[in-house]
Amino acid sequence: MWYMNKHWRLRSKGSSFIRNERGTVTIYMILIIVPIFIFQAVLIDFVRIKVASMEAEQALRAATRSVLSTYDKQLLDYGLFGVKANAVEQMTIANDVLSRYGTNGDTQATFKWIVLNSLEEHTKIVPLYSLGDHRLFHQQILEDMKYKAPIEFSRNVYHKWEGKKELVEQAEEELHIAEEIEALLKQREQKLVKAFDSVKRMSNHASDLYSAYNARFSDDYTYVSTDNLSILVNNDYLYLQDQFERMSEDVQEAERIEQRIAQQWDQEKFGTLVNDTYILGHEFYMSYKLGATVPLSSFGAFANQVSALQEGDSASGSTQGFYDSFQAWFNYRSNEESRRSASYKNLESKKNIQRKKINDQMDQTKEAVVSQMCPNVNEEQYRRLTSYYDNYINFNGNLDTDANNYETGASLEQTPDQYQSSSISMLSKLTAVIETIRDEAYVNEYALYYFNHRITSKQVNKSPLEEAMRQHALQEQEVEYILYGLSSCTANRIAAYTEIYMLRFAIRMVEALTDARKAAVGSPLLIVLTAAAEGGIKAFRDMERIVNGEEVAVFAKWGAMTMNYADYLRMFLAAHSREDRKLSRIQALIQLNTETELLQRPAYIELNSITTINLWFIRGREYQIKKTAAMSY
Image (cartoon, rainbow, N blue to C red; front, side):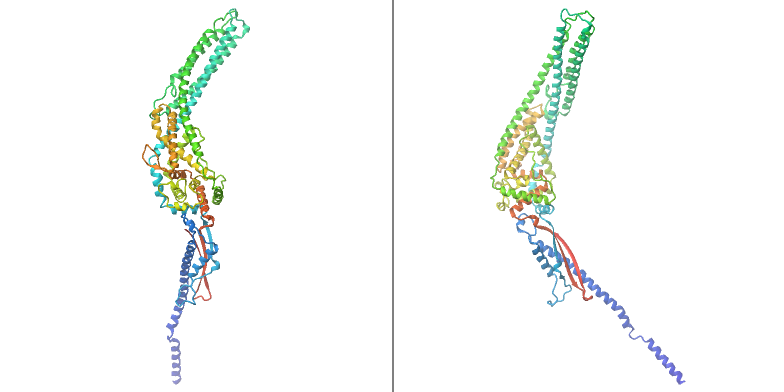
């Protein structure tokens, strides 16, 4: 019994030991909390890495901005920003800023959540684009001028030309019609001259035949079969018939040309058609052809008579009929041709009088142009400008060796007809450009705002930069160089003078057209030439006033809005829209004035850096953060 009880007690104790639950919760919590703690520790380091990455990015951006803050103050005078610091200075500035975002934990009493360590030897600055690049240069110009240019351009040019485009287009259309009618008139004249040449050949041949046959048909002449008169007279008839057909073709073509003249004729503009000059009428051409059939038929009758001769017949006196017929027809045709030709020559004489007036005025303008001389004191500056220009134009991918050559349609070596056509075309092109110009206006205003021109010192509204412009290497010629790019002040000044004269010539011609229509009714080209002759004289007076700094009314008959020398340069800058040339010339002038090569002034840089952070829970490990930032002004 005692053994049984003892055995039972031992079994009870063993079961209690196995089933005891003390410490179970602790073990359970350890199994749960340790993984959580490890996860949180890793999460903490992960969060620190993310925060450190953001801090590194902010540090890099701040460093990049600090490098960009070392801009060239000389270029700031032109509204431009470019880094002046050299590569070593840039690196020093960048590393200094990056290091300030890191801390020295041994010397700091406060707790630091993030400690960034910059690896200065891995910091790298790459200049991506400089102010020598047209894309960046153009962007900075737009930023600088976007608040200035719209006001200036609108005030000085656009509003002065509002509503004038239709007027100019109407004048240009009228000129083109006049030129087309004039060309058709000359073609018709050539056809009628050829037709009358055929008339003269027929008449002369008939006279020769009259003499030849009269000599052959003497009083005692009798036909013999061996004379072959039939063959001879038939050949003569065929010749006259051939000349008649040639004459008829020319007359028919002349009438077709006249019909085209009538189709283009605008009676409201050109007045009533001038008889005997432009419109001869259908009856004139019918008479021309039908009149020739009478003498031709007469000679045909003579040929039939000869062909019908029998051996022993006499043909005496049979030539008089066709001779008289040809003489009567030729005399009538000659009188008609003399009257028509006299009318045409009279019209041509009037045109030539107006052409001479235009020519004389152009000669006077040439003399004035020759006087547009500058002192030859800037040869060295222009030599340097050419070198700088070539560098910038080639850097921007333009390999055109003639890129700096100016080609103008304003040459005074043209004929009066060519000059009036060129001037109206130029005026039409300018009015169209003004209405569509956008960003290019900013570049043009930039040129006129920061650079001097011929009358900068004479302007009523003084430039705010006039004092600064006096320090420029070139005086009273910079904008002209930007516009034309020629190799001397004189050449650029002459180019500006001739273009302004041509534009004023066109404007004054448009104004004079109304009065000229009344004075030269019935001849489109004479109307245009008369207006051009009057316009040329007024344009020369305008030109003298403009180059002396005066304001001149744009259209004297339509409003009192005026334009000065600078306004005309604005228009020409818009017309000569090769922006690569224009920007390169501006860059060359800036380099000449500041002695700063824009290719060495970065305006868009890339900064690369590597920073590290010590991990708390992964001992002995550093996490590297690589960042890249690219910024421009």
